[in-house]
Image (cartoon, rainbow, N blue to C red):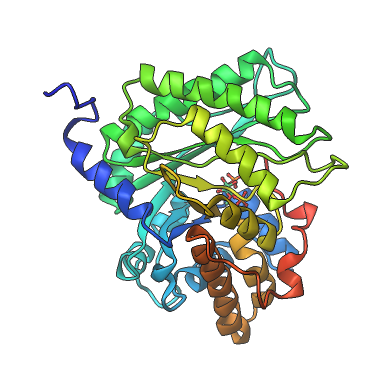
Length: 359
Ligand code: 5MM
């Protein structure tokens, strides 16, 4: 092998191609990989029971939005959805591929308390990951997602940061060995009264460790995608930041910590309102970046869509239109061309705190 090739085995070329497809101009990721516990919270907010049939109806609505693939390059699925069909019997994976959307899979097994830490957590899922990943590839998944979290009010302790970074790096190496592009997601939670500078300091530490261990595990940077939190003040901080400030801090962080070999940075929305997440992304794309800077939103794409649907078949079309409005707005923001014109009042409202993730 030439000095330019890093491990990643026989899948190297495919990984690079998949990552580039997901990080293609004007497109981003629809995160629809809510675990059953989180999906239950979403369904409860519109008065629905957390049954497999209701989850299937909602996921069918999402993946069958006409023209979704023009703005969405990848969709992250929960395991149930990867093996599920739409309500009219088509495999969800096939529907996505027809829409020109790459299917992805959440492979982590969720957060549990980290013994020996300051009430912090770590992310499970490495046991058996290689064989699960191979099966997910067979089922049509081409990228993977692993979300671990770091809490600023609880420290973060050096132990929690090291564990988060090491787990992400082991997961990334195993994913690449099995043909899946790993999305590396150390979410720095929005909770807390801290200012933007404190978030910046913690994020620099976290990303330094993440890249140290990614390199140590021989992960091929050209075949990964990142899913970072934007650098913002804590949710309970009295000082708010403008999109320009968020962009300045976040881009500074990325420039200092992320090699240009990484093809795409796909931000999470973390509880920001739909419009806020779009404005912040747009501000980051006002000048060329070394990487494709885009979105991998769950709540900031789905919030109005879910409320509009309300579990009623007669609202499916309106709910699909609502998802497309957000997908298009973020597509413009990826190109730095979002104006914010015509946004509904609903989209500017914050995400209900009872719609946080289940963990
Ligand atoms: C959709 O939520 C994802 C899965 O979370 P749980 O395992 O807790 O159910 C989550 O990883 C999500 O993809 C990211 O947090 C991004 O979502 P937001 O809402 O922050 O954009």
